[in-house]
Length: 305
Image 1 (cartoon, one colour):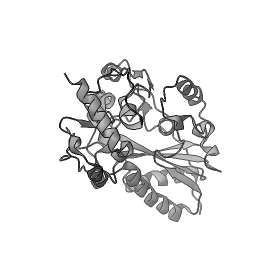
Image 2 (tube, rainbow, N blue to C red; image 1 turned 90 degrees about the vertical axis):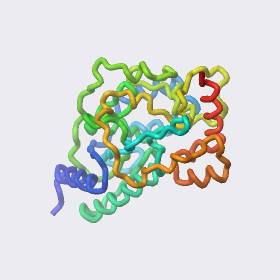
Image 3 (cartoon, rainbow, N blue to C red; image 1 turned 180 degrees about the vertical axis):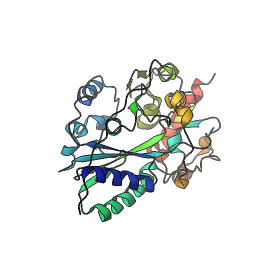
Image 4 (cartoon, one colour; image 1 turned 135 degrees about the vertical axis):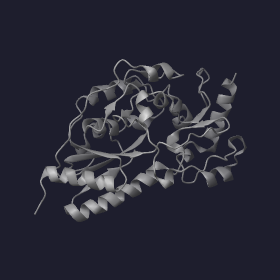
């Protein structure tokens, strides 16, 4: 006997939790009408900096049915990455998401297990799964499914859980009962805006071309000559706007062994290409390459008092 849309939604959520996802939300696939003008304005004002890929596949970003034929449902998944302890990398700082193994690898493995289980129990269906790897507005879909709200720092904030979560999606041709959005609980708080040392944040918008994460990860060239912002010792990514968010006082350490860190003993200023490739072979830090890390270290050292 086939399951109803409500039963399919419930089944997907139960299975998602079984395979380690903290929360799961369901949305009906369609055009993201609210986000379309916001994305267009963000791109037109060049707030994506040198991230040219952000301007690609504009139509697909706004409508998953153009990305996956027959898509009826977007399944939003979140996976905790908050560490038990922060790393102070002598004295450089690394974003928490990069402490362990590259999240793309870890989450894809979890999603494949979930996918296989759903295929077995719900019957054959088609679709695709994504982990920050396609033109999908993942935060918009997570918001639409009621997992949380988009905070003033442009991160998804989950009530009484915080924002240190990876996002992933299943785009499937099954019809599942959708959830609905929740309200915004940022209120009058502006801690993230006030704390950003490069003034990259205005309410609900991050200017990617000013963000420390952009400069230390996405920027491929040298730091701009007119750059004056203090990176506060961040050499890969930045967590400032999340660290100061009051909702992250609810963060609980993850239990994923593959996110445990091997960075405690790294000699960041003494890295050779061979050592870099060995240590970071399965790490998100590999993205910026050794020359990027060296450039970032050089910049933050210049800014020290």
